[in-house]
Amino acid sequence: MSQSLIADFIELALSRGVLRFGEFELKSGRISPYFFNAGLVCDSEASSLLAKLYASRLSGAGVTQLFGAAYKGIPLAAGVAQMLWSEHAARVAWGYNRKEAKAHGEGGQLVGAPVAGQSVWIIDDVITAGTAMREVISLLKAEGAQIAGVIVALDRKERGVGANSAIQELKAEGYRVEALFSIDEIIDYVAASPKLKVHLSAMQTYRETYGVS
Image (tube, rainbow, N blue to C red):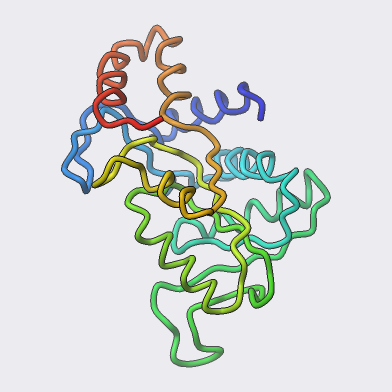
């Protein structure tokens, strides 16, 4: 993937407040020097560029079906499916899950393209503890889907309760996991930016303290 495209998105993320620097308390209780909130990718320019990044990464993977993990993965699945068609002429089905099963209408937790017998890529913004992703994987498998892979925007490369990150744990279980960029690309961007370089030491210290390879 083009590094310039990643840099373009980081710049856009900074301008929208999607990526911020400072001190942020995480669910784990750690104080992080940066915060990434894909929920703020909420205008056409930012959404299109993020979808383009996902589509570029997936274009050679033979993707036939995307599944958006509720809730932030839902608009991602829709946007990336459209981008795969418009930019790469790849016809891709997509769907998503509800957090709670619907008792009326069509019922159930799944919406969109049927997953039974399909090879499905799960799409989301980040994987933190991995709990929500495991729930989606279990749900899809129970419906007869095969998991082709998981793709997220950001890999924090940060260990969880144990020695490994949630992404490393999923990979160790045999799942293919892709990320558009990681904390390392963010650190490189900060190091090259006179305006942001004030945050470099904190970013590097956090990476050294909690990071995984």
